[in-house]
Image 1 (tube, helix red, strand yellow):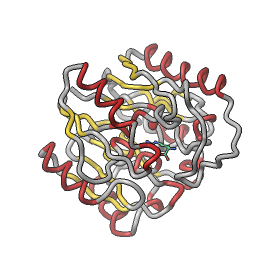
Image 2 (tube, rainbow, N blue to C red):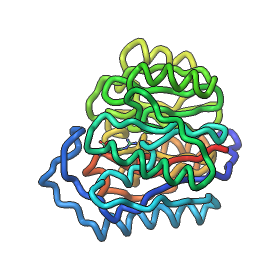
Image 3 (cartoon, rainbow, N blue to C red):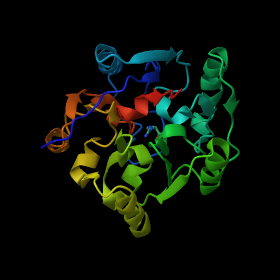
Image 4 (spheres, rainbow, N blue to C red):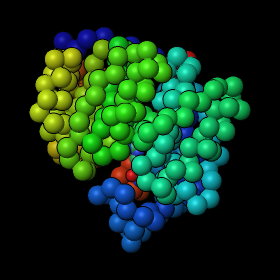
Length: 270
Ligand code: ARG
């Protein structure tokens, strides 16, 4: 018998993919000679936003800036807990100017932004659960940033080491289902980190490499609905068995840059 799931209304921040392209390679998914269909990308992105709104979520948008082809990946620009904004400092020089654009949006919306001192890529690697901030490291966000996050929010930060370059951000290997539970692909983590996750989340939904390679873990859950890549069919079926309602949204054009649904979505937690 699946438990009863409860939807909580979310506020999301997103950025239109007007300037989206694959122009450099900073993860194994990116091939600069890849053809990106910009019209299709725009259409897929709009479907995601419409789907969020149809499910009762609030969506705000940051204006896209020319010359920043990865700016659509809003999750990387900050992590927001209790209305406090921990901004970003990108690993790749190509992405560093994105932080100023997002900061301008936050400041105009009345938030102060803390700019991290070391490499930190927002919700790409820093994932708040009910009790902790799960924090990825190994490819992008640094351990120093984990310490800074804990000091800033006063929430226990659980450092997790990522070991597979295809899952270079924590949000490609793990997502939060609700206050108490997560879904993740264990082999994306070091043995010790795997054990930590198993201790903290004994009831987690476990994913396979195929689920992860189809961007199934780059999903967004509102506690009931799980906005998930349609390619991750097997994982969606397992989530349905656990009482969640999968809502497929195809962002295949963005997979060419190593991103999916969650990468395009930042949550503003007030
Ligand atoms: N091309 C981008 C990068 O490698 C993709 C970012 C995906 N974002 C995410 N939250 N995983 O930085």
